[in-house]
Length: 489
Image 1: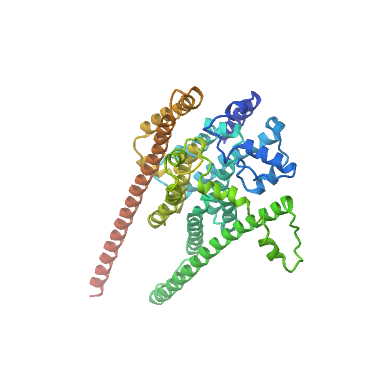
Image 2: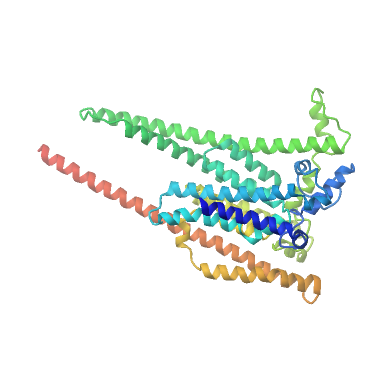
């Protein structure tokens, strides 16, 4: 507990010191941390336009949904030195660190791995959460007020609520993540699977407690009880199937309901501010006027369509900007569709293979989303690592750890020099930055593949152990039956 508190205080102190020395203006111009979607300058400009009565989506700079305009409507150019804004982003990182700690601690308590020492089980949640909180990339994203921190917070909070079998709140928080960016909507399937698994585990724990309390003393009524138990098992199976179907239906319905509700609220806010449309619920033709308005969901074009169509091709650490600048205009829409459809295609085989391991399925899908982002930042890299290492069993089976660590150090160190050689000095070209960003993304894909390989090894080992136990039980039961038959004879 003392170690955890000291690390949290150290992370808060580092952020306060960097704010005090005014490093925000230095890192605010770094392409590794600022993108057209996560830029705080674009939000300040949109708030300024909104205060003067003009639409913030009139230009091509602001791409966040309207609720963020309402939340940060007090922001201006002088608010960069405002400690209220700084405290908000420090608290976001602090909550993410605490959520990682709680998620890893809960998974360790459920797994009960005998291979891990007690000291290692205590240190592991603190180590992984501190890797995220004390990482220089997360500190830099906090310095530049990166709006991508909100999506990371929503994803971690939805995972934690799903581990506690809270389907309503987890779908609501996930709808907030999907409202900010479109791609986290793919996490609805593993989140529902995680909720179903946690509820079944809680139900089994209650049954085991009841069985331990009730002691059966009568041996004469075994046959009757066995018949009753078989009937009960059949009923419980039917009840479980109906419950799982209801949970699937309820989870998808709640997620879509929250998401549509947020979009409708955004539309009402946008209409009441930037159009002559007056909100009057008592009007009998309310829905007709609402949907026939000229300003009908125009913010979707500048938010979700912007992310899916990848209209802004400013250089970043991703891959899409270079590929789309080099392709012909005729093939652009086809390439954009294939690039955005990769996550949807990968969702199907991952869910089929890891449906009984929903927490790892969440980690795989979130990591694939972060790797294949249209506008990624370096702050996504520690988040990807911590998400993949939520299950400590996989750390034992991973290979090439030193190679990955040193390789990422070299690649990340060469990002800013290659950008300077191309943009500022003019002595290079776009291939310099694209080559190093390609190697960075390839390294992240290799890490994901290595974690999937280690997960497959762990799953096969668990299946082999279950087969051995079942064979031993069958052998012991047959022995007992033969001995009982001999006694009867």
